[in-house]
Amino acid sequence: MNKFINNGDDNHIIQKRELLTLPFISTFIVCLVGLYLALDKPFVGLGVAGHQVMGTIIGALAFWMFKPGGIPFAVGTVVLLVGCVMSGLSIGQVTAGFSGSSLWLLIPALFFGFALKKSGLGNRIAFFVLKSINPSYIGILLVWLGLGIGFSLLTPSIGIRFLILTAISVSVADACDLLKGSRGRSLIIITAWASAIFPGTGWYTGSLYGPVLTGFLPIEMQQIATEGLWLKVMVLPWIFITIAFFIIIYFMLRPKEKLQITREKFAMLYHELGNITKSEKIVSATLMAVLLCLTFQKMLGLASFQIMLLGFLIFLLTRVIGKQDIGTGISWDIILFIGVIIGLPNIIITSGIASWAEPVLGYVITFLTRSSLTFLIGLTLIFFALRFIDVTWGFAAGAFLATATPVLYHTYHIHPTIVLMIFTFGGTLFFTSYQQPWIPQAESIMQDAGWNPKHLWQAACVYAGVVILTLIVFLPYWKAIGVMLL
Image 1: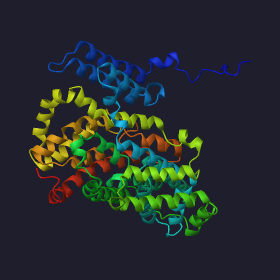
Image 2 (image 1 turned 60 degrees about the horizontal axis):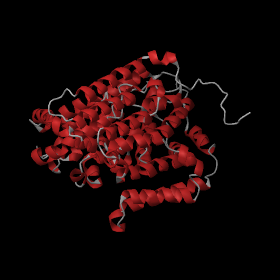
Image 3 (image 1 turned 180 degrees about the vertical axis):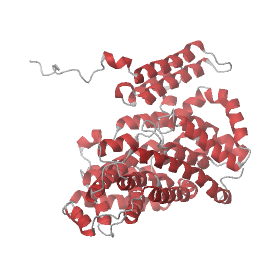
Image 4 (image 1 turned 45 degrees about the vertical axis):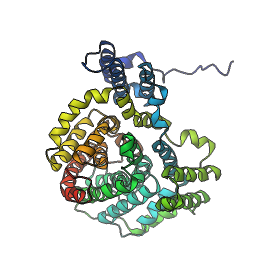
């Protein structure tokens, strides 16, 4: 029998009955809208290429938003690439996001997170800290906060961080004999998940938002949106958001009963990990060296992506990351998606969509810039609303709105890092699982042993409220450092 002939079942192939499901129907309808725009060209003042590119973007968004049949992001990515080139854009213009430094910082950063998880170093660090405290709800929450900040320094991959911390938090909740669906279990697991996401956003290399969102900016804005200014503008607000979120969630969900666990139980969980391995030592030394080089990169004359790639090279040479890990260690589907999304602002500008939409954006900007607080809260609420239809972590909406940053900076003296900060606030929103892919990913690990969905929704409301409070509290600070002079 020919070994190349597949005689297995075709259950993984698309089935006829799937075509009548809501994701397929929704995708089909939205794609028809995109096709209508591309062919009929209804908008006055927008050229042929602009209509075709707009229709292509809408079609790509349909596949990204509804993911019919669980298809990968690559489907929408290919639709966008092919459609834009057919519309008259050059392949260089369409793939500009793949040649920038942002993507080449992102790739090694994701592999750093993979090495942290594969070696077991992440688990060892977490249980080492846990065995050093007197078990209590407050003590565990403080550990999550410390680990969230520490892991953010080691890897910008939020996915890796929450995979490690949510898995550990379930083990901690089980060790504490907390019932499924209980307030105590939800408190421990939700705060662990949040600690993996919130604090690291405050510095450029602490999350994927840094390199991705900065890549959206026009070149002149990228030159002033430096890593140091990102830290100056965002680190204190995101620390404030994390602490305020933890405090409110603690008083909202804390049980009356104390935890039934001893420090010895945590010590036993740590000892079950065994002796530290050679790969853990290599990962630890390499990540510390990378952190040190990032701190003194100006003195060394190296860019961030160069330092990260050198660290990645060490992992390859020492075989901490093997040949088989290159293909499976990180999601290349996400890499392709982010690469094309980073280039989306350039596509929007080149096709003429940005200049055509300028009057509409101008009206919105004029309305929002009546005062500093109106701008901050108004743009945040707009982005929150867009997140209910933009399931790409807000990247698609952010890529379009980033084209307005030169006007905001030169005319209204609003620095682009302020706009990027608002994008991070909206990107982290988690009211629904389709809105925030990190929720179903975490739930797939925890199975039915995770948080109570009702408690998670309450936590989402707390987060949204804390963001608005943060805008009010930190407005004088942003004015003082000169990034919000409206």
